[in-house]
Image (cartoon, rainbow, N blue to C red):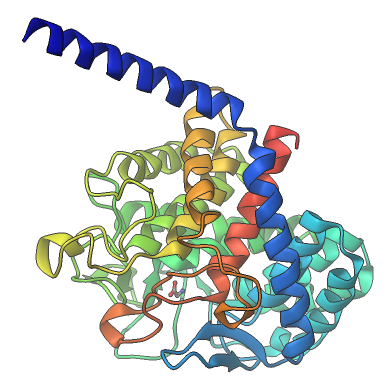
Length: 398
Ligand code: GLY
């Protein structure tokens, strides 16, 4: 018995030692090389296959691809992916294609009925300007930011997210993602009110969207007359009280970017607390790709059978990598993001070249309870995965 026990201990020590060694001796270049090849092939073929202004959004259950026009909230992600693809691979053809797919979105700048202008314009035109410095991209960014800022109401202290539905003044956690655009535009176009609106939105959201454990509600409906909270609810989560996975990811990313732009300590604390909720969640699967809602296993299904959301994982990885650069003890965030990126870069999630509707990642979930985009490829998963890879390579100096 004694012998068996000591053999057992030796086996554990050896296997944990070899795990540690493996982490050190398996250079990131190994898994990144295959990933970069797949990214190059998928994006090159996708840009040849799809048409500017009719961008690929997701793969339908019958294997066909859902393409979307200018009004769709996700339409900026494909051009943005082409820009990141260019940065990751150095393939100039991707930059030429990125330009065409970006310019086709010009009239988005006139849209006034949604908060999604950040996703639509900053991911496309924002990356175009960041990478090329070409000032001809600025008018669309300027007009779009003006329209986004106009959705801020000082009585509520927040930007109105949607104009549809039976809400009085709905604000969704996703809206945190569009503040980075306002911070950038405020500085670029010298509009202090954009910066004030973004910070006010973040403070109002901090007060009302979060629970004691730093998970967040999806939608807060406000009384537009006095800014009081009418209802705390969900739109895409399992229940009003549950932690919808992508919502937690949007919150983490949003507060990380608010801190990066303002250095307001309240935003850093919030980002770190959300990171703790995500990273310590007991039900996170071993590969660190969350199920579409953190509470789903309690109510609907077991973790193994419930669909994952690779898009939430990609957003979390990108946010944690950025957060790691804002703090002194960032290694834990880099390690967690690295684990996610390795999972997403494995055969379980990474497409085979020429398959998956020419998207890069499999296994995202859009809106489970609406039976929409379940366990499939979705454009925003690819976008944040590419962004995370770029951040990872910069941090690791690869
Ligand atoms: N912003 C909508 C979503 O995350 O599905």
